[in-house]
Length: 603
Image (cartoon, rainbow, N blue to C red):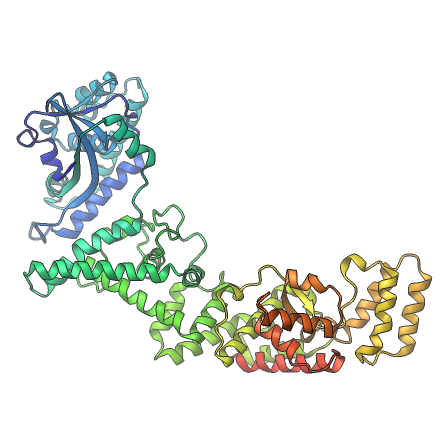
């Protein structure tokens, strides 16, 4: 197989093809490019023109730059009489339609034929390649599917052209771009063409945006770098291309580490890569390209390869080194994102923010905060302010952001033993995870990335838990529980305990009785935040309603045997008590300690 890079004019020029033509064989599907595909191609070429053409001087900035329209695969037939198009007939036909509209019909005479779709060939040759279709505004009945799509493409070219506000020679230069600066990679192959076609179309996958950007950067960025520094040494360019390839691999490998990948994913919205042509699972470097897109948005351009195709004028200097600037920007993003990940406090605070308040924070806002900070310590302070804002917002009176009063309200709610946190699960989980973050930062322990959300965990009472849900109507379980309440030293009046016991024994249906008991127990701190932790569901259910001492022994043993991962705050809560009982006094101490730690953290 040989690869040739040919401009559109060379592709159809007699001097290049020696009177040969292209044939669309019968195993090819019909023409079916949609209007949107045609418009995108026309707009891409216009964007390329705007990049390299100065209308005031009627000159091109660079004589070497070209627009690459991917490839076509062809195979020589009948001893070189013509080429069968194995792959790329959609592009080839579309180019022919555009050329015809812009008056370059002389290039197309006898150059494009169809083996079995004679009607398609006749319509192209008689109506499109002669320009009759546009000149006569032919509205005849559409005969077949190919004709429908060809007409739609032809109409789109005309519509698009009329929408443009061409300046002086701009339209003429656009045609010049189409002819001489639009190039295709021509793969000339040999062998069984049906098998080649099957291999190409049956097993091929579109190149990922990362592949295309790698090619653009290595090809153009290094060249622009040395043109900017006025060096003509091709060896330096080639050496730098090798270095660029190595760095791009390094970046992709770093982004692909499991925990790094999850961290990067949290920083972006959930649908960031939908229909973009960038597969972040195969090429994790795409996370950084998405970040670049969000940092330098173009409201008219979606997140696709087209956004990056000609580089980005990051500096806004119009020097013509946009690919080089884009490469430098990629390195810069890689640098500060890696700084975020490797700094323990920044890692913890960012992971907490984006895991628990993803609908309220966004990458660009955090990036701007980073840029405006005087250093890492300043940035860390700003992150703590963000966390504080979202934790305290529900305690701000009438929407007024009075941080002092909001903190007082939160502290009051945290320390009130009658507060039923068990029913405030979303806020409870956020507070418990924030405690993990606080204790991890203090102890220099790096919280695993999956710990910033609660998944596969239960909210567990440290001590004095009522019977399980399935036992709520079990008299024996409740009577046993009431007998144990004295051991918890909750200072519950013995007369009250006797009353509960009597009611349970007398009533057939105990729903109302147990409901009232639970309500009264809440006033003793049963569901206060000081009596609640997060535990892995399997671990929690393994000991069910065991005593505090049994729970503590199992949890600590599991931790040291690596049977289950234990959260820092959960481990602290169980290991800080050195007795075999968990009493009301323990709940009070636990509540006061965590309230102090939370309030002390918030800014």
